[in-house]
Amino acid sequence: MSHPDFPPPMIDKMPLERALELLDFIPTATGYTRKWDDLEFSAGESFDCWFLIRGGFCTKRTAFPPHEERIYSPIAPIDLMATIYRRWSEVYFSKESLDTFLIWGKEWIDYQREIRKLIPPPPSLWAEREFFRHCLNYIEQQYDWIDEEYDIVFSQAPGQLRINAKEIELYCPARGNWIGEMTISAKSLFRWLPKRFIGQVVSLQAKSDKLIIDSRQFPARWSEHDKSKQI
Image (tube, rainbow, N blue to C red; front, side, top):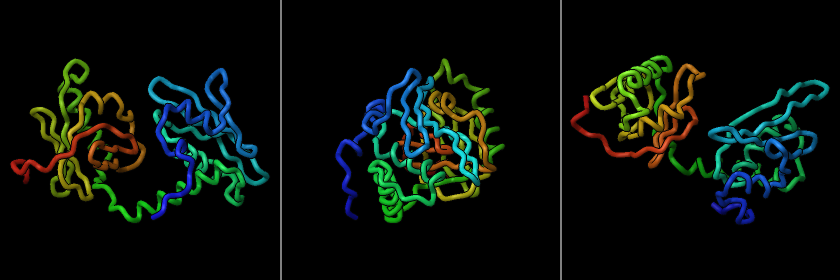
């Protein structure tokens, strides 16, 4: 599939501040800001990430409350622009913009959608939320991850997610298809894991160098199953 024709800087990862500048955001006392049509977007830094905020907006029929989401550095400007386009189009869903950046954002979304059709989805499991949280809380209570570095290993057993940490082995009800096992640092997991999960299930996706838990990415190592653990 041919690649959309974007200027090279748009698809290269770079510090977030530089990406915002390439998209013509204006520096402010608290971050960066820019408008598309009458819709204001702002970006501000938090202690572990940045936040992109779409301002509130009202039409004659609908009120759109402010929307806030995390963004991380480094980032490709085109990925950031795709996020902005999604939030812009929620308000101006019946309008086709002539703004070059918005057009690129839409084209990038369309291009990524076509690419995903050609690539098999990553191995995924959906674990029961409360039991999954109970398992992680139990491990965290047994082993101090702040002062001691250790690994947590996720793998699949029939109808279950298997979780190994040092001498502990736990099983959580789960569905899906996952071949192999993912090893993640307990320090990385517990430091950045969300305090609460919203849905009834928690999604886990395994990639070669990362584990995605409820859209949060963690560095991880993939390996084939240890057959001695099979049940």
